[in-house]
Amino acid sequence: MVAMKPESPTDPDAYVRGLEWSLAISERLSETRTPDEVLDVVYEEVRNRLGYDRVGIDLLDHAAGIYECRLGTDAEGNNLIPTDRLLGLQPDSPLWR
View 1 (cartoon, rainbow, N blue to C red):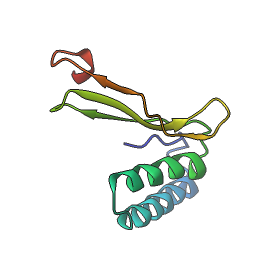
View 2: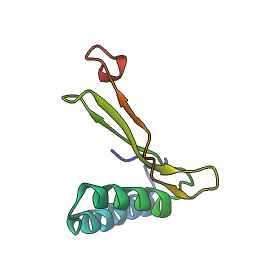
View 3: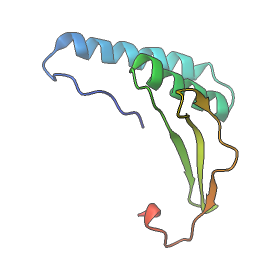
View 4: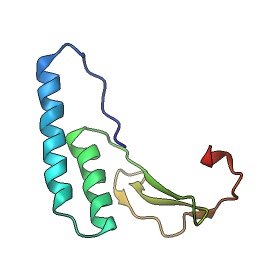
């Protein structure tokens, strides 16, 4: 899941830029070997190529009942890898709906 900045749907240059970005991130992702490498690439691409100054990547594991904040941006704009943001969720948690 990736959030892209809205651009005019009739702008052919924006469409081409979107395709180029999709190709670039696909190539980088195909070179990754671990889940952490995948998350790093997604974080960097969303932040650098799409121009967002804040990015957060959270993972949900329904089978294990876990919500985890894996990667983000701190108050100073630096890459943040939290080590204490793991929450257990009940099977009826609204987050699963």
